[in-house]
Each structure stands twice: as structure tokens, then as C-alpha cells.
Amino acid sequence: MELKLYDTLTKEKQPFRPLDPKDVRMYVCGPTVYDFAHIGNARPVIVFDVLFRLLRHVYGADHVKYVRNITDVDDKINDRAARDFPGLPLNEAIRKVTEQTEKQFHADVDALGCLRPTVEPRATEHIAEMREIIEKLIANGNAYAEQDHVLFKVASDPNYGKLARRSLDEMLAGARVDVAPYKHDAMDFVLWKPSKPGEPSWPSPAGIKAEGRPGWHIECSAMAWKHLGEQFDIHGGGIDLVFPHHENELAQSCCAFHEERMANVWMHNGFLQVEGEKMSKSLGNFVTINELLATDKFGGRKWDGEVLRLAMLRTHYRSPIDWTVEALGVSKKAIDYWYDVIGDDTEPCGDIDAVLHDALLDDLNISNAIARLHAIALEARGAASGKAQLDLKRNLKSSAMILGLLGRTKREYLESDPQVILVDEAKVEVSLAARTAARARKDFKESDRIRDELAAMGVAIKDGKDADGNPVTTWEIAR
View 1 (cartoon, rainbow, N blue to C red):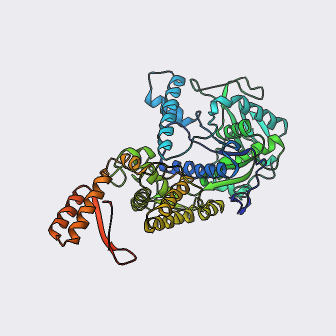
View 2 (cartoon, rainbow, N blue to C red; view 1 turned 180 degrees about the horizontal axis):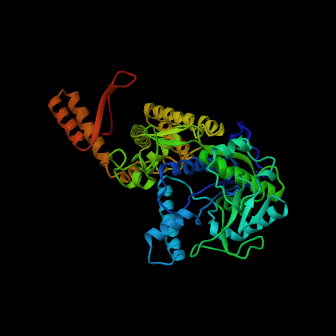
View 3 (cartoon, rainbow, N blue to C red; view 1 turned 60 degrees about the horizontal axis):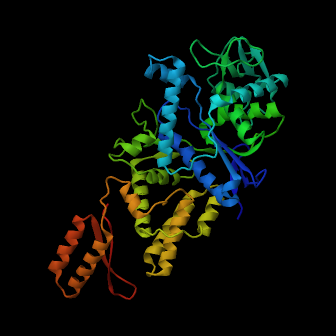
């Protein structure tokens, strides 16, 4: 089965045909580093991490290049710097904010089990590329300078609006358009603008004497061009970026380089809401990745990164997701159960399960992939001990790892959760053997005593019968 992906531009799921199978290239819009990343920010990070893992599996790890940018020049960064470091010059304060926030972001997404991108460029390191693209756009008649600003002339691009599938009138009516005297048309957007006193600034393009700084949209066009070329395979991000950010990126890049496409496939993950409502600070339901990992703010407990990851993946990436405590609880039970099945096996994993692999090739149908993990786990739990059961356990682990799950041993997972009691498995097995012997001689008082002793250790037992009708006892960590 071949990889198929849904393209936002064509509104179709189509076979993925990389421009060069030996150099598969993907760009995803990354964070603006001024504060802790919220759980909505985590969704594209996790979704495109799974795609990155899948592409590496299909084409080879050395043949996939994943670029995720860092926006380190923005009004929100300036405001945060002035607020947190009022005694410092603004540029020094900005550097402190961006360095600290980038470190926070990496720590949080590392905990979610995400691989680092191949390249993680910062916007401020690509000012030269931004100026070069702007000069190309002016020379091509797609941009103009006015009152120390440079703006993209939307009317010069007949394809503008194709990604969002809106007419100019619809976009004008639905957008918060800045009406300014330096614009020739209300829909024109800023490529470069003058800096205010004390703000970061660089020599301006287009012969403008005053120093300035880039607009948001030109940053991603420049970084994608620098690291992936004029055209590349996949451009990803949240659905909220389709317009205006990705629409503007597409227009800039295509007009600058005289190409019909910037990326061959545009992929967007759906919106996230919290407990049925849009996440906002005013509603009191705004939650960061760090708060979920490190505090009891959401659901009265801390959550392991793998649990958060699974909860995010249970809904198809293009569908809206409702982030709930209940969903996290379901995900935790699943992760706990899978680690119970795998145990502490540290042997090399086998091949990825074929059914799960095919599900991922179908536009990242992770819901079906997760269903397959459940099936493998149940089969492993019910298999007779020996090589068949061991093979199933390793298949479960290797198959889950392409989703960024189950990359640890059972003990390592339990040690990462401060609310779980670690148990001595050898001691549990000895106690179970003693209880089985007590039941065989009908010493039920001793049997009950051992059961209570195990319960005090955090172990729940279940008595049943095997396929031949013989008594059998299973155990798991009490939840």
C-alpha cells in the first residue's frame, strides 16, 4: 500500500509523490517564543512528528528533512520582554525571553515523545533571505514600497485565495484588515515595516533608509526557501493558519520564484477545544503543556507525556478534538495496560505490524492504528507463554513506537508517574504461587490474607479459568 495524504489545496486525498524520494522535505510552522506553549500548540507538533516518523520509516531516516521554525521577532515577544525585564534594554530583554521560552518549549515537546526536527531555524537568522525575496517581489511587480513599508500587492496574484478557497471579497469581509494610508488596497499585506525606537531592526530592502523588521508571513517563506528550496513536498500546520498566514506564504513564494506550487501537499490539523468549549484565558480553561505535565491543574493530577500524546492521537488529525479529563483517563488506562502486557522486555523490537502500517499510510489513520494496538495487546495477553507471546509483546512495542508510544520498559514508565506505586514483580509471583497452593488445599483464610497483602502492595488480582477449565489467576497494578 502506498502513502496517501489529504491536500488542503485540492481538497483531495491523493498518493504522495515526493519530488525526490532520496530527499523528502517537510516544513511545519513552529512556535512564537514568548510564553509556555498551550495544549493547542501541541497538536501540530505531535501530528507532524508522527508523519516525520512514518516518512523516515518509508524513505529512510537519512532521506527525510523536517524543518520547523522558531519565530523570535514579534510584537508579543516585545511586549513580554518589556513586561518581564523593564530594567534592561529591549533587545537584551528580548533575547532573555526567547532563549528561556525556546528552552521551555523543547523540554515540553521532548516530554511528549517528539523527535527534534532536522533543522530548527530562527527567523532573526534569515533576514537576508527575507530581503532577497522582497526584492524579487518588487522586481516582479508583486510588491511596492510606501511610507517606509513594503507590501504585497494581492491584486497582482490571480491565484490568491486558492488555498483558503475564498474570493477577495469574502476574505476582506472575514478578515481583520488593517486600513492604513500606506496601502494601495485594503487586502495588501505587510512584508516589511519600520521599527519603533528600541525595537529590533535591520537595514531595510527597496532602498528604504529607515531600519525596519519583517512581517510575519515573509519569515516562513524565507526559512522554507533557505532550507528546503523553491519547492518542497509537504507544508503543515494548524487549520487556523490557512488564512491569512499560509495563503500569504503561498502567494509570496510562488510570485517570487515563478512557481505554481510552494509545497506539493498542504496539511492542516483540526481545531482543539477544552471540555466542549473554545480554550481561552477568560473562560479559565486555558492550559499549557507544562501545566499538564507538572501540575494538578487539569483533572487533579499530573499526566505522563505518553498519556497526553495518546489522547491527542485518538482523534483523526483533520477532525476537531475535545480535550477532556475523561479522554486523558481513557488514554492512561490504555497506556498502563499496554505496558503491563509488554513488561520489562528489553530485547530488540521486530517489524512494525502490517495492518497498523497500512492504517498510517491512509492519511495517518491513527484511530485504526490504535485499534490495532489494542488487538495485538489482547492477543498477547491471551497467548500461551513462550515464543509466541514474546513475539506479540515485541510486535506491540515496535508497532507503537512509530506513533511515539511505548518507547520505555514498564518500570521506566511507572517511575515517570509519581502517582503510581512500583511493585516487585518477583515478590508478586511468589505470593500468587503461595495463594494458589493455599486455595488448592482449601485454606481460604490464608488465600484471603495473601490477596489482602497484594492489595496493600497496589496489586489487583483476578481469578478465572484457562481454556481447559483449570483455575488461573492474573494480576495487574491497581488503578
